[in-house]
Length: 463
Ligand SMILES: *[C@@H]1O[C@H](CO)[C@@H](O)[C@H](O)[C@H]1NC(C)=O
Ligand SMILES: *[C@@H]1O[C@H](CO)[C@@H](O)[C@H](O)[C@H]1NC(C)=O
Ligand SMILES: *[C@@H]1O[C@H](CO)[C@@H](O)[C@H](O)[C@H]1NC(C)=O
Image (tube, rainbow, N blue to C red; front, side, top):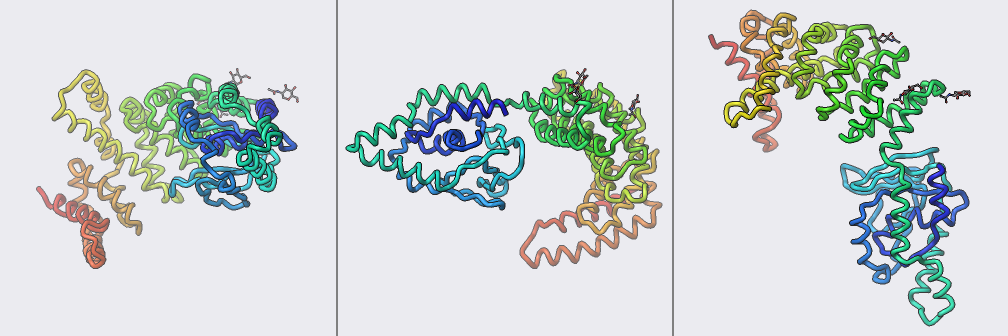
């Protein structure tokens, strides 16, 4: 807040700017004219600034810069449209287009778009489209009519030279709330005994967003946030348990150094305890997500998981009435571990082994998952998933069954239900493949599933 006030007073109306740059910094430029101070804090690559310098506004008719009128619905922003301060701007990842709506929420909003990111101050008055139009007109007059010296001077007085502006941008850069500062603020909010549960939940959800970035996740560790989050896994409030697991799962995703910290901080034990005890399914879903992220590509965590009885915990969860929706996720965790180990040993066949590869092989060798799966009844449990009406569940089950074939073949052969399911599926998918071919799809999804079914049938017959 303080930051935005300081900034707002520094900025003046000026139009001798470049189009690109002008659009980017529109919020700042106009901040001076609004009654209550507002600022969109932008972190901008200096390269972009330099490039922007080359296109001058004089080349463009400022009237062409249409003013966008945000409503309370998201609307696509067309190139060249100017956005009033206080609007929400987001990037639609599907269309790649910028979308805008009226800012109505209080407080700060985090946004990120390519290299740009910042906090948008939301409790701000936005200047009106009329104000903007008026200002544009004024500029146009000044630029088109240099004879009117007095007016030109008046307009020029409102412009600021580019270097001055750049200086301001540098100052701004320093005043931008960095991700670390945002995280500090969120952690303080989360760690403050005076915060309500709602405030803590909100802080965790914002943190969850930030820790998708590798650096932020590592900062979470160095700032003491990871151990705090792990501690909250067994908070007495289920919403806090759920959110803590969510933050943890996102922070460790594809982030080996953070995975190490989480396992060493005792996260796995706590997560498994949450899965093994009575909790709402919403909590268990996020906890399973965290477990999966923690185990992925991390053999050390996987052998730890085995030692802690993780497979047994998952077996029980798989058979818990009411947890059916989680079955496919559970199978996926197990399947991913089987395949990961298999792939790493295959890679070993054709690359020149270096010491780190040897170490990985050694670590994976310690993960002896398949015998534990057999022992815990998974040769019988996985076929149950074939009864699901969902194609992707069946697909996942078939892939897992094939991966377990060597260990489970005897049990599979004795399982009359499995044999019946397979021949039923074979019929179904043969028909579905025909419908796929009717619409000209040769290598369709149903064909893929049929291949898996056929392969199961063949392998079960093998001696
Ligand atoms: C919590 O609130 C009390 C009373 O309002 C205040 O004295 C204390 O400093 C606050 N604690 C923190 C950590 O903000
Ligand atoms: C949380 O608060 C405690 C006591 O107020 C403090 O010792 C600890 O460092 C804080 N943790 C974080 C991550 O801010
Ligand atoms: C959380 O778990 C730890 C050990 O895992 C225990 O010492 C602590 O008392 C638990 N806290 C709550 C609130 O249950």
